[in-house]
Image 1 (spheres, one colour):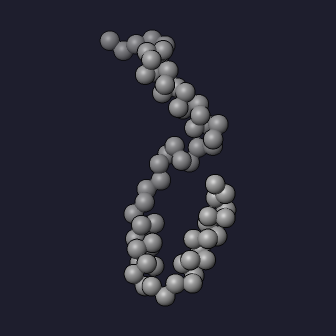
Image 2 (cartoon, helix red, strand yellow):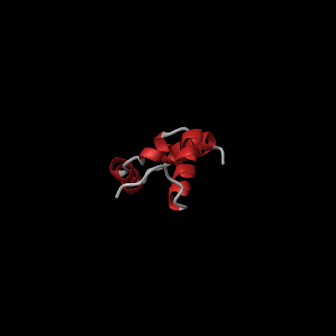
Amino acid sequence: MNIQAEKLNLLQTIMNTNDEGLIMDVKAFLSGRKADWLDELSDEQQKDVMEGLAEADRGETVGSCK
């Protein structure tokens, strides 16, 4: 998926519409959307986090809380 092309297509659709309801829906969606902290990380950082979670799920951790 080319994210830049997708953004341009969405922008073009919004710019060409006269549907006020669509505009208000998009605005409400974007206003209510909270960014996931994982989305803010680079691909490499996301990969590292996911690997760490998988290791923890397998019990591959250092030390333990008792």
